[in-house]
Length: 265
Image (cartoon, rainbow, N blue to C red; front, top):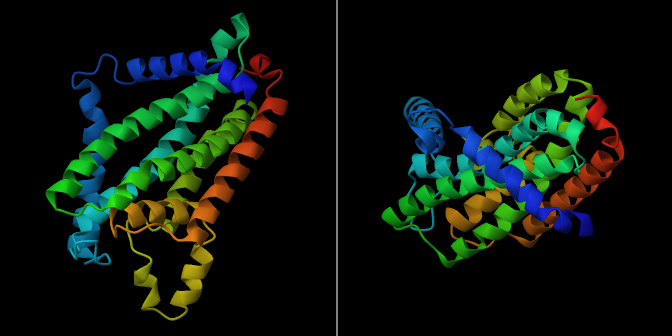
């Protein structure tokens, strides 16, 4: 932790470089950070709300507007996905620099996680305006940074692992893309867990689903932003445990395995 603190400036520089280069030479620039999630939101809303008639559980104010329910889930998912995918690209992209000067290889990976946090903050700002507009705001909103911080720690640990493995086996980035798609549909981002309860073995499916850490994070976001409630003690426990294990394992494996990583880049 002391080394992490010592290199905080460098991590910040990598985050700044990532943010500056992300939309460089594009005409719309930072507008793309909103256009992409807005397009995804529109497509899923049409498919699952209009065609499949998906109905979310009632919100804090009693509304059942699917697009807002989906928006909350997508903000959480996009943040996790951006950190994991960005981590692999960040370490590969820093290869030339690592061969010239010494710095901890985890610095560009954590820098990318920080830049993803900035982008998510923009999406969250838009989401907050929507929640205010539909009058679905509760004091539990102030717990959002805590849930987001736990998700950042969890995603960073996963990102460190995949970034390291991807240096030695470049198939990892393609495999992660496929696995993330599977996890996306297995996590209640575009659907509500309550939809399972109406089917045979639905209660069992929900209990099995509950061991998926991303299920806990997505539902944690919906607790504080959709239903306006405090996540249950068991949910806090799952999120804290998942974040601690992920960053503990991720950092340990990464530091041990990245000592000679510059030779592979």
